[in-house]
Length: 57
Image (cartoon, rainbow, N blue to C red; front, side, top):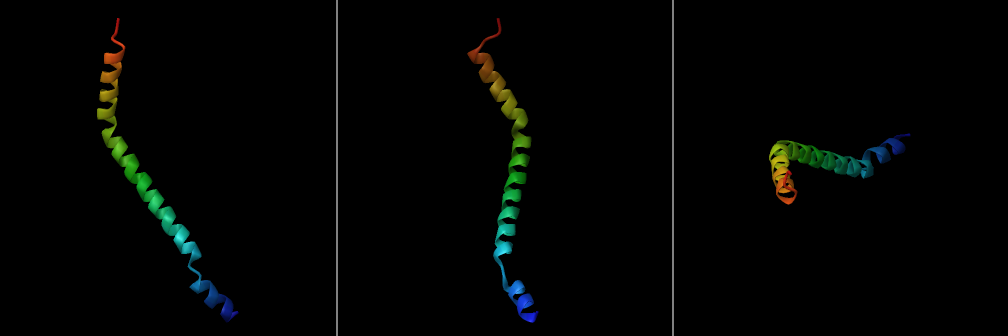
């Protein structure tokens, strides 16, 4: 039983997956924050471009 616990404690394969998951979550939060901050200016820019391509009648 002691060998099982020692082997379990030394196994780090799950730790790598968790680290990658945390990195992906951090990147997602950063993207959501940046896009949320820029959404007003992006909307204005795309509206301006749309109006120039298709002028209102």
